[in-house]
Image (cartoon, rainbow, N blue to C red):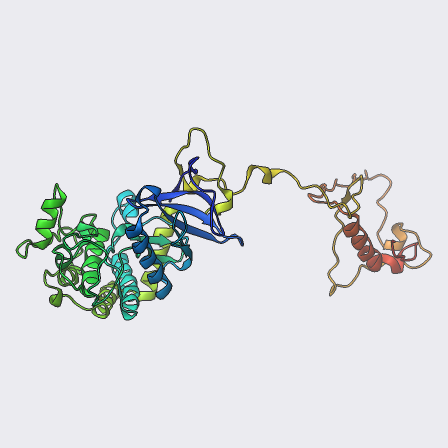
Length: 422
């Protein structure tokens, strides 16, 4: 994921969220990387000042209400919003990962078994959305984030209540993404049914497996014509053979000919099992595959201040800690710091027997240890130098504790009596 510095005209905070950088933008708004008061990262979407009007506020308020209604492990969680603010904003869970569109464009299509696993995950998530009486209506690769914990669905800006005749668009206006749009949605039919999301999911899985969509054309007008033409069959070239029957059904021209989402889950599961895997194994492989491609996460607090001029910085190349973190912190004022360092003494395990000391009144010579003196004519080898300890004790409190442990172990045979250092 790419994050660019804030522009001079960007707000520094919205609600309780501090804004740290720019994630992306669309026709109606800008998305920022934000951070809550407790340090929770968030994706904060803001309507552009140039398009703030009563109609955009109404649509934005609808998106907020939708996000308050839906929930699930594969849905980016709602964190906060204010549709009445001067600059209306909406905060959702931040997912650290590329979207599916960018992943396929940069890394190539997914293997067949991983595409099937992705289909099962998303179909089950959409089934939960439909159970709550909602349709997504704008499912596409750019709205699927491949995070470290698996894929998540974002952007319910065009979501609508199923069976609803109420629309926020003009009578002849069609809103959505044509390459993933169901024929009845492209034709402006009302009301829409859950089958529109089934078609969009099929188009998205075809893209994930092949890198192309069911219909492609040079202009939007020609594309709409292909999508709505019952005689124009979707292009399934390069699709995995074991997924072709399921994709054919999902991309059927008539809504009533498409399978239900539960049938899609079962079809994807069967495709995974045909490869000799269980669905849970395929899910783990999908997450490992996509997470490995985009690299480790970077905490939002590690974002550098804006450069001049602003440059686009890949998210995986951002510093993991601020530059000042390399400095050694000063010791606390209430801890005594010695002017010298002490070598680390050996730690005697509590369960081990202490070394046998010399008898009281004896010195430390050869007789007391039982060792024999070497003959006079034999050269005495100098003792081997011991390596210096790699660590040193820097706090007198720790030094005193170590000294007490040494005294407790060796005091019975020492010339001094143990005493507590004060």
